[in-house]
Structure formats: structure tokens, C-alpha cells
Length: 178
Image 1 (spheres, one colour):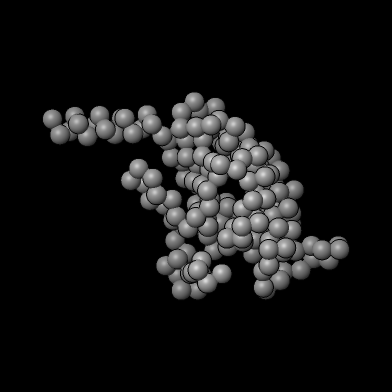
Image 2 (tube, rainbow, N blue to C red):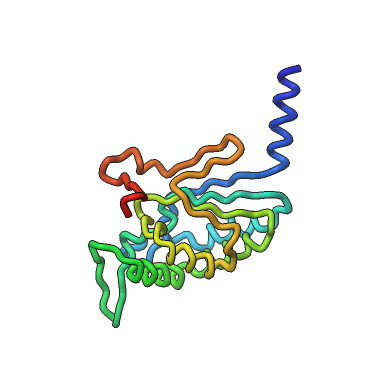
């Protein structure tokens, strides 16, 4: 009886929500320092999730964006500033958006379904996502303010996901210190 009950609960939870976890995508600025070259494959995969007619949580588990290797371009000059400000982060987000437009459009399509949610767990390459203005700009780009969440972890229905950099003394961050 316990096995049947567990199986029924598992089946019920599966029917309620599907959780898809992707990590270390590291979309950059489309320059030589941008390692991500799989726009077509990722976009196709995300679009395939768009057609699911049930609840789907898409968890982008850290380092979705590679702000570290994305150049800051202002007045035609490219630099890699050591200290990050909201202005620098917003400019870099715009650069990443232009370099990987196809992926952003796929994410936008994914979010058109009211049962779909997008979670960004923040990794060591995208600390810029801690800035509220960067979060708001990303929500604006993706055309959804209510079903996009930013956090250091994802925890729903017994599923726990984090990027893992918090266990590395060199990459650990305390959001309260920002």
C-alpha cells in the first residue's frame, strides 16, 4: 500500500508541475570572450517547453549570463571594469541581449503561458542580477513582471537547486553586504 501511495503522489506531483534545470549557460557579449555559441540549440529547447500545456518551472541555475567576460562598451570604448555599478550592469545586459536575441525571444515565448515560471538562481558570473534595476530590465525585456524570480536558490515541492558557488570562499557572496 505504501508503494502504491508513493507512486500515486509522485504521479500527482509530476502532473502538477515539471521542473527543468539548466546551468552555466554563460551568455556573454558576442565578443571573443563569449564562450556561448549555442543560441539555436538553446532557443529550440526553450521553445519546445513553450508548447507544454502544464505548469513548468524553468530554473536557470546560475551563470546564465557571463557579466564577468562581457565588455562594458561606452562611447565606442571597450573595458572590463573591476568594480561593478548598476549602470555598468545594465549596459552589459543590453550587450548580452543584442548578442543572444534569439534566446531572449524564446524565453519570452516560454513566459506567454500563464502556467510557466522562470527562475534565475544567481551564480558567480552573474552577480549583477542582484541589482534591482537589472532584474526590472530583464523582466521588461522578457515581457513579464510576475512570473520571473531571482534568488540564490530554487526550492519548490521538495526540489532544491543552487549554483554552488556559495561553497567556494573565492566566489561566495553575502547579498546583505551589497
